[in-house]
Length: 483
Ligand SMILES: [Zn+2]
Figure 1 (spheres, rainbow, N blue to C red):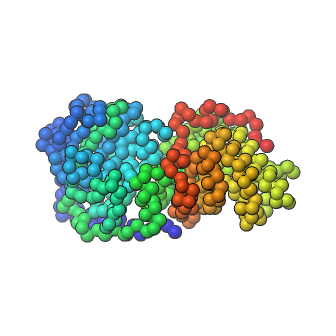
Figure 2 (cartoon, rainbow, N blue to C red):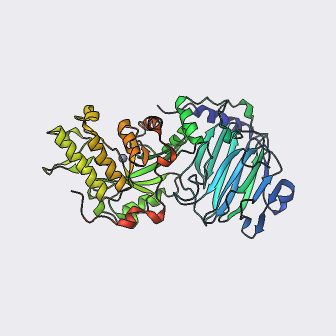
Figure 3 (tube, helix red, strand yellow):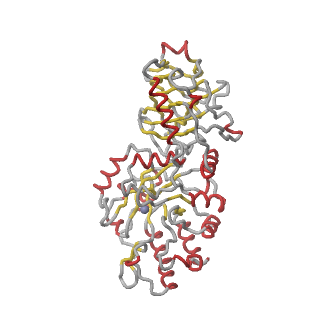
């Protein structure tokens, strides 16, 4: 199921590059006071002791030289509100957006452009914050043959292989690799963009780009490409580093398949993260990774184990309704057949819906995951048991508590009928896999099917709340465990 076709292309590109480097030297063109006149043109940019300052929408520096294979290294800083871009493969600097655009934007979630620093805009969008305002960061962009790679602070954020016959809608018709100019610009009127250092290493003589052949996208990848063009937030918010899956492998899988990941820690009684100190240690350990950081709230006891301030450090938190205690006091885990007791199908369903209402009404979570999951005994009757009345009760509690609904790729739930009803009810959605290891990551096929069949658009999709709007900080944590 994994998209592995492009891996050989990367290897070819790297091999071509490395076998040539011994004999020839790359040319390095700096952007500094000494080279400004000779190699660059500038408009509305001032020189300061901190570097070149871009303050308004007309601020731009463009190269006088053209490159095809290169590496850009830039040391940058933004202040609140500033958005900018580095564009390459630009045919004419009079139209500086016609090329491949890499976004510079460190705004909080739901503020400014949803694409954040390192996004290869409308080709491989990045929605994860990778740098902060008022802090220097390093942006690295390389083009070797048909392989484009963007890294922020030495972490690869976006990666793309341009196929032999790339399809481009008219809005980004110029988004094609060519020997072109490089521009660095401010793209809005707010804040400041500072460029302390920038250099372009021309690798023209080192790479035979015409020898690099890239596989054509398969049918699923064409859907992913189209949604990237539309800036649709393709994010799997429910990935676990379980069963040997490493952070680097997860990030590579996301890049290979054209979406972003949110990586979740399981937090609760008898889980690795059980209190503020283990929570803080976990988050500090992954703070530089280019993924959303998520908390999966386990069991119902989690509300008593952590402080709101610690919980609010996560980008978002979520829970499911698969662990609860029934009327006879039996703690059930619905995915474990020998821990689940179903004596009467209808009564069980009513109890389940009641539990979902209680959990989502009581716990300040952002997303309801593994939704509508039924124990193995009931799963064959899913469509009959999830009656319109029961669906509407779940949709109502989601809407009333501003909780997004996960479209689960692994279990293929909720049903399309449920999702259509939820969209009509004004609910927001997320994608999630809930993988158990590195063997069941998949390619979010069911989520993409749902986008098509339910007619989901960007505005139907959840994005994490900004720091000032964290639910847990507004409501606190309930003092009582959900019964
Ligand atoms: Zn999970």
